[in-house]
Amino acid sequence: MKKILVIHGPNLNLLGTREPGVYGTATLASINGGLLKSAAKAGAKVDFFQSNHEGEIVSRIGAAPGSYDGILINPAAYTHTSVAIRDAVAAVRLPVVEVHLSNIYAREAFRHQSLISPVAAGQISGFGTHSYELGLAALLKLVSAPAASSSKTLSSKSVKRPAAAKRKTRR
Ligand code: DQA
Image (cartoon, rainbow, N blue to C red; front, side, top):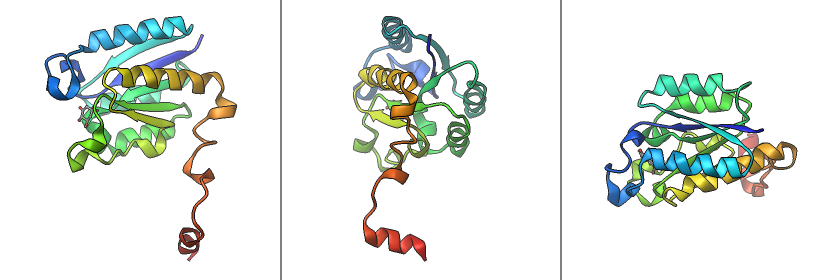
């Protein structure tokens, strides 16, 4: 049975009452409940962790290998600031899928950059609570067929770059 760790970053414990116009009215408990059901249907197990503290999130990511097959994470505000969380994701040899309730690219400029995306298998943003469901489905697919569809095979390294860009980096 595949095991997934779901990590929720800062202020996501306040979902339900936190800026409902942006994040909706679903609570964290109801999001987790939905994920639990979806995982069970797929024959997988999910554990949940929410923290408002960067170091705690770093530690949970670092401790995941051996206990989990993949990580679904909404790093929340740390998405845009945390080199430590990015390095933890890069350090563990586990597929990590990044999710956001809101479309971070349609919001303030400081939310347009994710430090996590370049080291994640992929990112889903803007579908409200459905982002988590889509992220879980993608992650379960990844951990079930790692050789065929891992982030490594679809990384930017395998994406053909224009000749001009190649010339520039060779200098
Ligand atoms: C968020 C987007 C972040 O920019 C923000 O800081 C959050 C939530 C989202 O799920 O839309 O806390 O990650």
